[in-house]
Length: 304
Ligand code: PRP
Ligand code: ZN
Image (tube, rainbow, N blue to C red):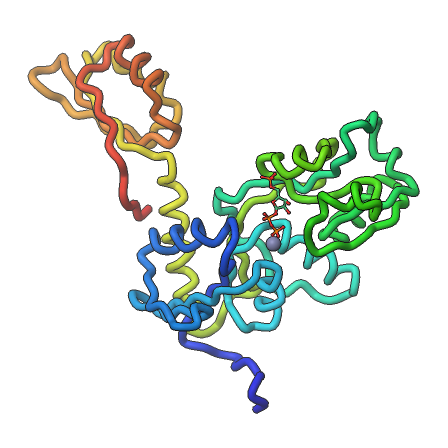
């Protein structure tokens, strides 16, 4: 075996996450909320799992799809944009897809947009015919242009794409937009969304046949539990029996409400897991509809 060869089986799960950047802290926090913890290594590139045989690899986000394809890591938390770009490039090169998106993770939301100089009068994709478009996403942009039937010159840049029009390298750009601040600072305006992105869990197309299969199931189950509870709260209140149907109408997001009888037949205590945000406005609406002693409690864990 050559020193770089990757063993076909492993008894620990290896998850790649972004070393530093926008997805880095939320990715670690999400995995920590799944009960995972790590011993920090001195080089901080590999973190050995303490509470479960799940190790972390801290890498550049753009490297994650390749690490998955090579089997160096088993799962990755990466922007859909990065995953899809490399899938588009693999498809264009006739290579098979070895990893895929398994679960959207609800953070790191952004868009891949075409943005034009403020002064442009945007009239649609046809306007891009023959233009130079700077991007770090040639695969996704190329696919979109082909769908639009537009031929343009794709200028591939690995960063600082927004400055390309001012430097005369390109006419327009295609880049990620989150708050829009970077575009605005460069006198550019988003005109067309090519794709919506967020952080996702990426993993193998085929499930693992070794112990990693079980570890992966545990990870997915816990992630599912954590994500489902994101905005969820336990709502408790009391109300008169005849007011309960009206109150339940105000709680379309309540999961199997439990009703308990208290002092005599007329008062009921209600308890329900609600998945939508429990704002003050909602509580006031419930109170007006007859709810008393309203309480909203955080839910720490759930195992369906
Ligand atoms: C991204 C992206 C844009 C910017 C958009 O870069 O490439 O430049 O964020 O964010 P905004 O709309 O909130 O201004 P990032 O800072 O992640 O650096 P990178 O491109 O070097 O990864
Ligand atoms: Zn990046």
